[in-house]
Image (cartoon, rainbow, N blue to C red):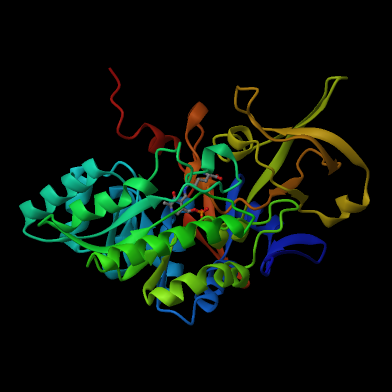
Length: 416
Ligand code: LLP
């Protein structure tokens, strides 16, 4: 579903006009659709209905408490990668038996915090981490439920910065060392081996790499069982891509169809860690045109959102569609422009050489597909307060994070 459609000649989120919203909240503003969020979650829930499963939403994609709360109430768990994300998941009311802890560098303090509340699973990424977790668990007198994240060494065919399942990446335990690692894990007193985990990358638009990876994990699980290491949870990670431009990623159903045969046969509970495919197209970044500039060489549209608000275009060369809020612009002249922000860097752009309906000073533009890794990766660079976040539900909306103030930005600093 696309919750962002033109109504009464204005782009809206569900039934809220983005013009009216901008007038009330100011810009830049991240705007999320509750209906789209829920649909993103439910599409997974339906696709995997025939096996026991938990959709553990990957908090890093968008960690706003309201987003977590909406998904948690619908039945989602959380995939966390830090003590901070654990804090958020708990604050949002996600039950601890639906929380899984991933990531290559968990600190002993973070492990302790997660063990104290009793989470479902730790996805462990190295032998040294395994030993550290064992020590922390024994100190607390508990057993840490563990899966080893195995690197299946498949090429996910995505951007190099977000590919993780290759042998050369820092993630997971190499496939050919996994058996030995499991045997060590099985002998540790502070650890209970319960699962196997994989995650091969993000924004995957082909089903084949998922199929290859899950086949390798399934074969490992069978070998482990032969050695009396019982695996009851298989975490297939996240990574399903979304449409930013012309991509045609697998549907949830197609994704499930590729994964399920191997998983069904194992009789395990399936854990999923999707992030982008739940929130990405449920959100946009609303911005206003400040100025126009024509250097003779190039035309620039200068907007009030910048790389501190949305880093994906400069960081990954990512494409985000830009739509005018005023539908009438679509019938007007078209021009090729760079859409840039106020930050003092040439890398501060949202689009380069983009053919767009001509936008005038004061116009509102919507930067689409910004619900995932948008606000979550934003910063205060150039001492810019981070944007307001708004959740729309039907014809009403809630400010789910107010715009930061200058005082917020210096709180915690000491002037000398
Ligand atoms: N599980 C693990 C272990 C992960 O590392 C990630 C993402 C996910 C799940 C969720 O993946 P998703 O379903 O969202 O693809 N900042 C980048 C994306 C980085 C992804 C990092 N890991 C971007 O803006 O494209």
